[in-house]
Image 1: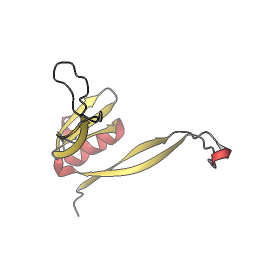
Image 2 (image 1 turned 180 degrees about the vertical axis):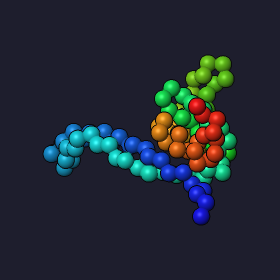
Image 3 (image 1 turned 30 degrees about the vertical axis):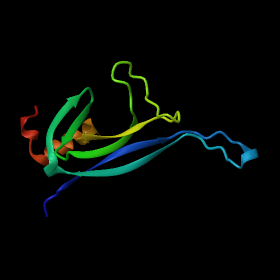
Image 4 (image 1 turned 45 degrees about the horizontal axis):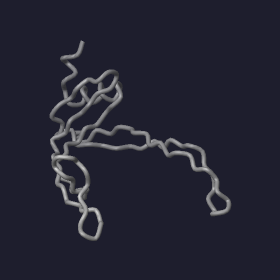
Length: 120
């Protein structure tokens, strides 16, 4: 069976929480959680070495919508309606997945997709 997904690790840092017994909040130390993610190797369009990591660009353009404050074109100041409330506009933006891999994961990916023969 041919491998279609590449699995890599990411680390999520959860900040510490200061205890507040009056409000029933328990204190916790900072914590790092290891997560496993994957992507379809058929979607890889470019691999770029950045310092000691590898940036993988995927062919998966997708749109996201976000509500942003409407601003004055010359001053950049937010606009308000007659009631004094800030005016928001819905903005559409297009994104492409950018995944950073460790050097070891990057070499494993290059071997998997068959471009390791160009490495020395």
